[in-house]
Image (tube, rainbow, N blue to C red; front, side, top):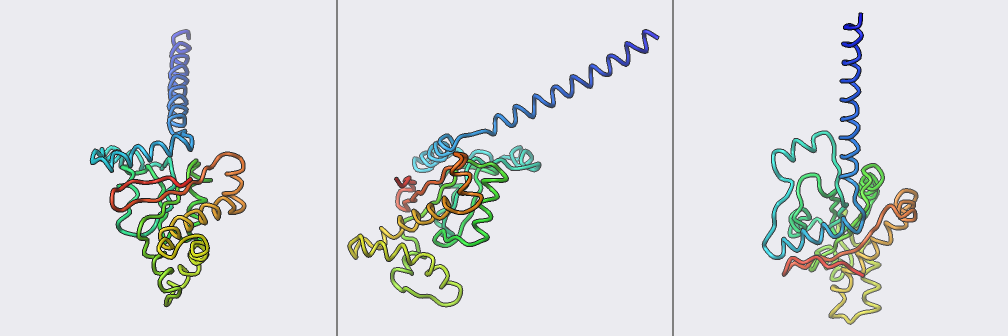
Length: 227
């Protein structure tokens, strides 16, 4: 009887030990995935510095990393960027699989689908940082400056970017209109996201989400945070 009791006790203790280890593992995993907006931004900028200097380490691109993210994703930042083929976010910031949640459209223009994607990353995945990144020589902005109109669905891009052009023309010299328009467009999108109700605006107000603007320089690869 005592031997049977002892065996049952050992089994229960073994199960309890396994459960405790699982709980500890889950707690550690959750803790390791926690990151502040400032830390996330610094991580991006450190990666960009490596890219610019030619010392990229290409992290999180191994077979082990692929296997690790099969069960779920925990990106530390959301990157809203242009579709331009010269501005690939994972390369520019020297990041890997599962590191950044990327949404791209020409001129970073927002629509319901892109907004929903950002909301998913911020609300469902708990990402603390959104970076809206424009870039030198943006074709969508340039076309709006030079043409002011476009055929087909391109007209929706022109319509979305036009307010930035109008403001730039009121504030900058004609020579600087394109350059100024790119940053103003980025700033407009940042404000649009900060005021997007109900999800993003609430997260921002509660201090759970930070949204910043940035600009990528094609000539040297540097990312500049807009103030």
